[in-house]
Image (cartoon, rainbow, N blue to C red; front, side, top):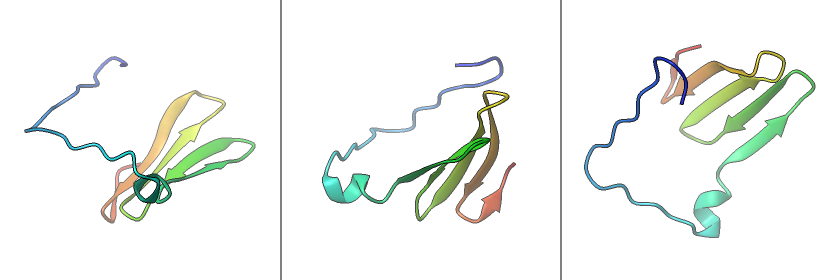
Length: 63
């Protein structure tokens, strides 16, 4: 965890390890960035800076 980051837990979390749930997430690794994508979110990390550079969750860009 980095400076300024927090972990919030609301209620009980349900975790699914089923192959169907895991197959919906896709990791795309390129020369400069690595992306993690699903139907409900997209996250991009910079390899060079080692930081999070983009978040899109439910159609909201926070990058």
